[in-house]
Image 1 (cartoon, rainbow, N blue to C red):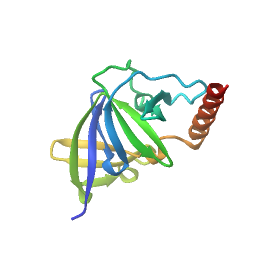
Image 2 (spheres, rainbow, N blue to C red):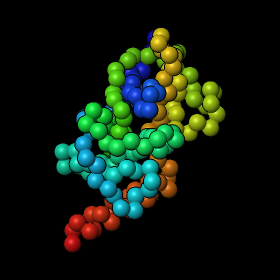
Image 3 (spheres, one colour):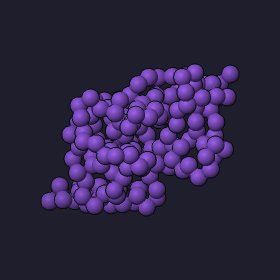
Image 4 (cartoon, rainbow, N blue to C red):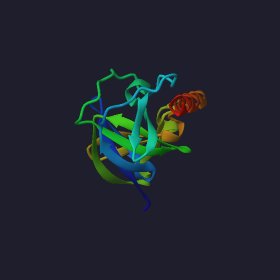
Length: 157
């Protein structure tokens, strides 16, 4: 039976997952530099081995209370469409292998759940699987691109 590899993580006391195929790496949280004119969903940017990576605010997207950056938090560096992004999470928990049959389509369970790829049924409960491909709206992606270009122009002066 086909399986899907997932990285489980916690945010605000809830468990979520991200398909491992999208994941580049997991690192400890570091200071986040602000990115002027970025959309509200972008917390700021970090430098990952010479690449400027935007931090997407998963808490804001799901209506959770904001928290300051703390060293015990993790950053999930992952692929979202054509760009590398990071999600700041409370902690990365585990790598799990889930049978495809144990994953319900988000559209079937919660129609209109636009940031959710599916719901995995695990022995110890349910886990929401994020859909990073749709995490940024087209408008937010455009705003992020414009803010990044403006920052690059300021730096080049």
